[in-house]
Length: 214
Image (cartoon, rainbow, N blue to C red):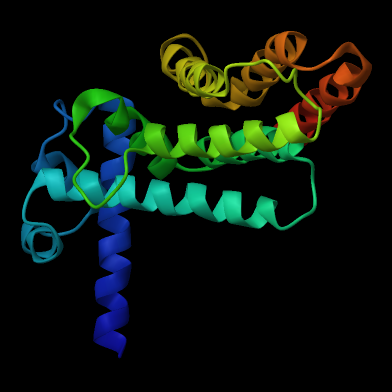
């Protein structure tokens, strides 16, 4: 049991070290030797768990996907409106990126540096499906205009969400992500939400920004 625990801890250490380097340097610019040095493990320990750098990248994307699903599952059961749930999901995923390198690296890897291997779903497809479901619910709840193109809006929301992080990676600290996300929602709410319900969601965006920035 102790040996198994040490093996699990070593695997987690390797994944975290790889994620940190992939996030800061990029996948192609990071070697296995770099990861060994950063994780402070032997090459034998790394190869025991991962046969190739691509396997490490895939493990990181799997963990990112699992974390996103957990955020969604948790918020789905809290009784929020569909639109509020969607907003909270985006802030929850952003918080994961602020707090740890694995979600940040997973996002960077998903932007094209590594192919996503089945059966793992591409995170952008997963997020688009979540947005589609929540937007359909928001239409039924009259929180968004009934004539919106749900598929187009879902695709645009994911593109906007991912884009804030991709651009921000170069221009500003990851801690600014909640502010950029609140800006995204304020702009989006103006186009989606009827005037009579707009103030509620603009206020929610500001509150979620404060909570995630605290």
